[in-house]
Amino acid sequence: MSDNIVLSAVMPNSPLSDSQYVRDFKSVLDSKVVEPTEVNSKRSHVGPHLGSRMHIYEYSVAQNDSFWAEIARRDFYWKQTWADDHHVKSYNFDKSKGPIFVKWFEGAVTNVCHNALDRHLPAHRERVCFYFEGNDPSVKETITYFDKSKGPIFVKWFEGAVTNVCHNALDRHLPAHRERVCFYFEGNDPSVKETITYGDMYTRVVVLANVLRYQYGIEKGDRVGLYLPMIPCAAVAMLACARIGAVITVVFGGFSAQALSSRLKDSRAKLLITADASSRGTKLIPLKDVADEALKTLEEEGMPIPCLVAENGNRDSCKMKEGRDTWCSDAVARLTPEQHLECPVEWMEAEDVLFLLYTSGSTGKPKAIEHTTAGYMVYAATTFKYSFDYHMDDVYF
Image (cartoon, rainbow, N blue to C red; front, side):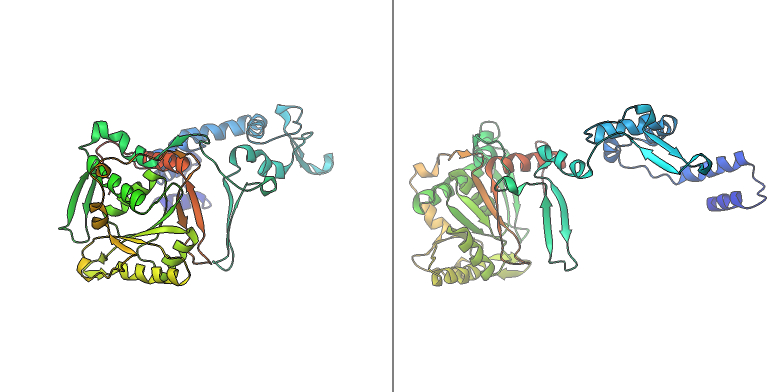
């Protein structure tokens, strides 16, 4: 085996010559080289291949002072630099010549804390500096470079701009892509399938947005809770709310009534959109029953809110409370013909809130994180485009 070659080479009185040992040892090393991925190679600080790394190493040996001087100037801040790039270090290891010492960058003036923190603030104030997890895993903290002494912590994107997420997701694509497929939907039962075009999606969003606007009085800035299974109505509801400037808070369909009611109360929701049921395999889960319990809790606490219910296979068994609950189909039927065709977009400031996303609540009361319109829209779309290398007609599953 190749390992035996290495062992024999270092044994006393080895029959292998030095040159033979070097050749055999190099052969062993070459056989064990694992090349990094192409992506990692391109972004590597030491270059795209082993030769690049060796070039850096050879330079560090041949011109050691210049090598370290370049790094020090490029990557660190100096209040005062050293006198000579060709003599960044000095040393003495000969006791007969005096005290033993090693000195680097003699004459330079700097500060480690400034290099670790201060110099990064202009470009990286919002970047995470530390993720801390204590001995007790529930003790966690995220520490950024933010400077609380200068006022409230914030991050703003595209300040002063005006846009709308729904318009960017639907309207602007209609002239060229009205008949292009927007969603392929397959239900819990694989036989339940639906193909939804951009034109179909636009119609559904316009209709639901007008239901919210004209029948529930939902306006820009109002909060709407979504407690839905993975059905097309969920995407329609998100875009409909974005279209009229309503702020959504999505509550996972597996959460309890208590988790739902606490989030609806904290967000001051004016409406809940849910479904009669959801399914997991062959099991039908009466989602509306959970919503009823949450809504009852809110009523007892003096915060009654209406509920819009989408049909999802359990209408006959679903209990509806008169004056509070309405089937989506019944609400749609009350729209005027014009309201089936058009719903004006509510143009949003860049920093207007788009949605609230709550923490899990596993370490205390759930806390809402506000995601604003422009920053989220641009970053989410760009991340999706480049992370998945998405192109027209690709199907994201």
